[in-house]
Structures are given as C-alpha cells and as structure tokens.
Image (cartoon, rainbow, N blue to C red; front, side, top):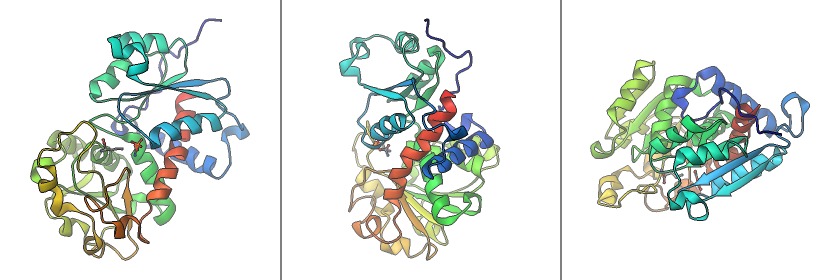
Length: 307
Ligand code: CP
Ligand code: NVA
C-alpha cells in the first residue's frame, strides 16, 4: 500500500499563521483530553499513525511530552537527531522532508534557523510542527495559555508581562497577543528587544502591546509575570548577564503585580539569574502545571494536525 500524504497538510508552524478559532479549537481539545474526554469518544484517535521528532537542539520537555502524548493517543513517535541521521552528513532538509513524508504522518522539528522549518514544510507532504526555532516557540505558548486559563480564567481579560530577553518565546507571546486579545507588556533591555517588525505586524492585527525597559512599570497590576533564560540555545553569552541583570523576576517585582498574579517560565530555569528561587519555587509559581500542560496542549495539536 503506498503512503497517502495529504494535499494540504495542516502545519503548526507559528501562531501568527493560524487563526484564533483554530487555536481555541486546539485548546478545547487539549482541555477535554486532560479531563479524559477523547475526541469522538475514541480512546486512540491516532492509532496506527507515526510522527518523526527531529531535534537539532537539546530538549527535555518537548521531546518527552511529544513522545508520551503520541503514545497516549495510540500512535508512535520516533526521535531523530542530525548525528544519527543523514541530515548530519548533509542530506538536505528538502530531501529529508520528502522521504520522511513517505513513512510518517507528521514531522516535528526543533532547529536553529526558522528557514529550516519553512523548507521542511515546503517539501513535506505531511503536517509539520514547530518544536522551537531561534525565532519562535508556539507549542510553549499554547501550554502557557492553557495554564493561565486553568488558574485565572479567560486570557483576553489578562495583563501578561514578559520580563527579560526578547527571545523566541517572547515572539510567540507577541503572535498570541494578536489572536487572544490580552494586553502584553514587554520589559526588555533596549538591545534585546523583540524585532520591531514582529511587534508592528502584531499591532497591525490589533494586538495591544506595550514596550518598556522598566520592569517595575511593566509588572505593576499584571496578572502574570513571565521570564526565560538569559542565554537561549545557540546564543553567545556575550555580556547578556550585564544587559539583563536588572530584569530578574524576584519578590520585589512580583509584589508589584496583582496579589493573585501567577509566575510562568517555560523552563529550563536558572535560579539566581532570570528568576529567584523564592519566586519560581514560591506559591505564585505555576511552572510545573505549565510543564505538564505541554503534554495536553500538544495532544491537541497532534489530533488537530493528523485528523
Ligand atoms: N520549554 C521547553 O521547550 O523545554 P525543552 O527545551 O526541555 O523542550
Ligand atoms: N529561549 C529558550 C527556550 C528553551 C525552551 C531557548 O531557546 O533556549
């Protein structure tokens, strides 16, 4: 039997390439499955299906949550790295996409250049999922929104504050701001801001985004404070610690947010750098629920992409 590829695969490449109704549908699927209610009552909606998980950078959460999620949905996941495949010997992304599409029903890629993800999607006959690039991390923000709403209700009413490096995770929050209607405050050093073009594109779609270099001003009255590592995978350390040391999320900053504000971090975290132990291990931190929700949110993405 020849392998059937879809004529128009449902890629999950970036939040800004999807519409709000689709993202809400995926979150609803995730919430239902977390409660044990499977789509159409089918306990194994992805039985007989496989996904290739290609990692060109390290991962704990993304790798394990996709692998376990696929198993829980009745399917199978293969973890591939460049060193163990012909990608590491120079086989092109395009050829890899064409070949993998004959074996598997979806491909997740974690890579450096966002162009690699675009190339994979252009040549794959099956859905491609962004498992993080230098430019964005959309799966993470789906889990984050799910976590926020579990704790505090509809996110459209929220003031969400990002404090630190204007990195890949921050970019996906900017994309989300244009789709989910919340107010996003970005407190980043001038030298490490999210690219102005990304902000302008989101604002043109109606996003409410405030940029500042003053973490205190951003945190005041917020419903949620978020930060991330000061040195992302692939970044040069340079003088990032000097640029970012005033952007640490600590007790004094949390005290400026609403009393019931939550703290989020995609992890891995560096206690004493971007966040103090007192905050990440404190009562307002929801980071373990956030990590768990990677599993549920991605099960929603997998079911949406593959059915
Ligand atoms: N948050 C996140 O993507 O973690 P990993 O790098 O461990 O996958
Ligand atoms: N910004 C971080 C996120 C890790 C999940 C990085 O890219 O390394």
